[in-house]
Length: 474
Image (cartoon, rainbow, N blue to C red; front, side, top):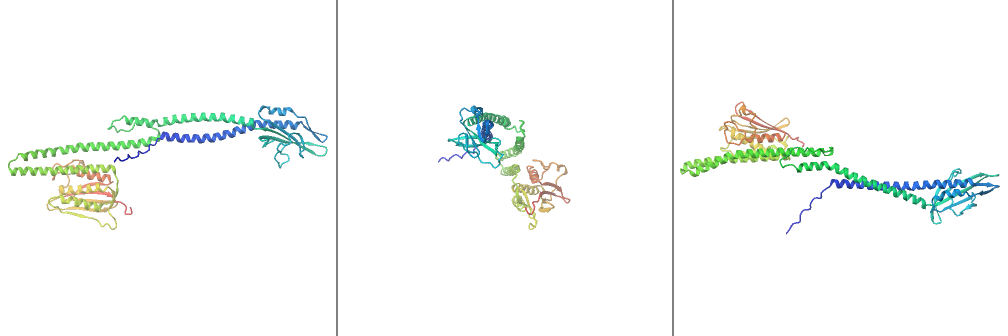
């Protein structure tokens, strides 16, 4: 039965996302500007034709006179000729006395709105209305003339349909819309070009990385903008760490191959000698030599694997609170039974009721360090009538793991090279690979601790690992 393929994660395009955001902003801006242009177009059309309406009303008002108490008006055709600039529109007028008596024009023209201020209509005012089923724009004013008894008032109104106004507003709006569309297209093209130019540094970095060999891990040389500086800096740091890890791995492989070649060759030669021996006693001695060499090789492989594990976990660094007393007990249990004859190893742990012996670290690495520390003391510092002390104690802000033996100690000449990998003294008491102290030193450094070796006054060596204590409340 074929299993369905897992769904591929959807890829995110920065270019498409930015373009979509810019397009949305442009559409929103275009809509807002369109509404502004539309309002401006209608306002401009109204302003233009309103001036003509006002001029026509003023012209009629000037021709209106009060003769012997009666209103007379000689219709100034120039007042209506002003409105001939809009031939599609219809024009209506009405002149009436204040009580409502029609003087001239269309009597059913909608009356102007009432105004509270009596002097408010001395100049033309405008309002909207519907006349004969069509929307009209009406200008009106009051004409006041002093009569023999009292002041007489007449109302002049001039109305015009909105066809020319709407046509002018639509023309302005259409021209403005075309300009907006052209501007938007040019702005989007410019935005696309600018976005392409802005993302070109990423393409340069991509081309540089694509053209490199697998072993080329030097920092990126392509210039990048400030926004990508942290990303490139992090990538350079990652490649530097990867290069360091690869260099460590290559060095480890080279040294491991060198260290394994000699015991393997010796083991092969000893096996050939044992096969050629006819004397059972000599053959037994050869097989014992093969066994010792195999044990040496096994220890070397175990230490190489331990070193590789420490190197790997030091790069991961997934630290958690760990109990040193438990790790030290496990290290003693795993290491001591392997020694022959059975040594006298004395483990002393503190009372953890008040201050639990906890540190922040990697339990596997710390256990490997403790095992190598005890194993070194068993191989190089144990004596027939002596003992080995393994202690865990608190000093200030550190937990101290001390392993004391009864051996010859460390020569002063080897104090500076004792922590190097595959470094051994001129006359080692027991076979080994020279990796134990380097593993312990690496683990201590990774945990912000320190490893110190000091010769004891009465003979022997004190190896101390100091690790920062975890606060009791943590």
